[in-house]
Amino acid sequence: MSKTYTKREFLKMMGLGLAFLPFMSCFSQSSSDSEQSAEAGQKKKEGKPEEAKGSESKVSDEDILLLTRDDQRYAGFNMAFNKRIKHLPKYIAVCRTEKGVQYAIQKAKAESLKVAVKSGGHSFEGFSSNDGGMVVNVSLMKKISWLDNGEVLMQPGCLLQEIQGALFPRKRLLPSGSCGTVGIAGLTLGGGYGFFSRKYGLTCDSLLELTLVDADGNVRSTKDDKELLWACKGGGNGNFGVVTSFRFKTYDMPPTFDSYVLKFRNMNVERFASSLSAWFDVSGQLPEEAFAAYVLNGKTLTVLITAYKSIAGFADRIAPLTALADSTSPTLNADLPKAMKRYYGRKGPIYFKNASSGLYKGKDDILQMKDELFNLVAGHPGIVFQVNTLGGRIADADLENASSYPHRQLPYLGELQAYWEQESQEAGLVKAFEEIQTLFHNAGIKAHYRNYPDINFKDWEKAYYGDNYSRLQEVKRKYDKDDLFHYPQSIRV
Image (tube, rainbow, N blue to C red):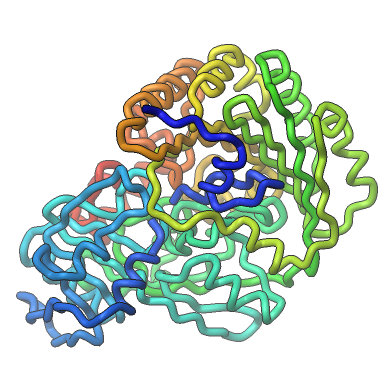
């Protein structure tokens, strides 16, 4: 029997306080907790790497742990954040060094195995694994090193909570997402947005350089190929190789963080339309230092508005929304490092399906289907519809030219989410989920965020990459001409 959650139960399940239903997208992209616990647990059978055919250098278990299905630690490293995703790769190559990554790719190539890349974050549709191929798992590669001029070098297994733990004590900031268990690799390679993006751009816009191991096992640097850097800023998720290091510029960390949480209860279609219209009007006038999210969960609406510096008259700017809300809870001048921990989210694994529900020009894109959309969300407990602000510096023309992320001029991002507790609840929620996605598609909403994929998207190449897809294919042919790195929506050769 399907369980309907009270608000208290739902927030508890999500690992949140009663005062706030935050960025639900923090459950979007698989936590590496299972991998780390497996690594730290009791001694178990290890896969000893043998020299791969064509390998020029020998490796040891200091470089790579090669697991097959009969290895005791295979199950721990094969666990996905999304419990509905189940894959069985032939090998899981748990790499500790770049040399280990090279070995894994050479072995996969020698055995004609397709490769998926897992960095320890989240994957909506399980694209970081496969059946019968190889998963190159770099979740244990977590080194962070400081360079000159506030630049930082980090390995691909770093999670956002680990990065913030390293940067905040130095009063530095990397614009990124809010959820602590999201991995920096997937976030950056698909774009990456969050509270600070309207001021500083997407996470990929702070990327200065990366190294990766290509399909031939060669180490490549974007110092030698600016086109590869362009491609990896929005189109690099597991398409061209395995990234082994990122170099980012960082910014001064704001000392404080303000947030306003507005609650609307007992929503109906009319109130949905009026609140959504007011939210768009208010969010469209916010300064770049501010961010807003509109989160409809059943018949309860939560609006989050944040700002990371004191802005004169800010309360007056959001007054049209607060006047409509049932309650408003401000938290002002909070210590920023402590405030960020409120958004770290729940550790997995959990049952869910999340995806982009489109990028929007404005409120009319959603209001044209307001009745059907509201009734489907309100009528299926567990479904959440969310809209987040983009815009600001994300739309900068120079940043647009320097990256393959294509949707710079669309200032709002929609996300559709479904969460459930029992496997038997999946069919009904996924059916409603797909009906909502069809509503958006039929209404002409066809641009989507690559980090929020949906296996059912029609014309996903155009949806994710716009007019940049053919150019990305050229990069794919250069670094992976035989399509070694492959998943259901990877860039095709």
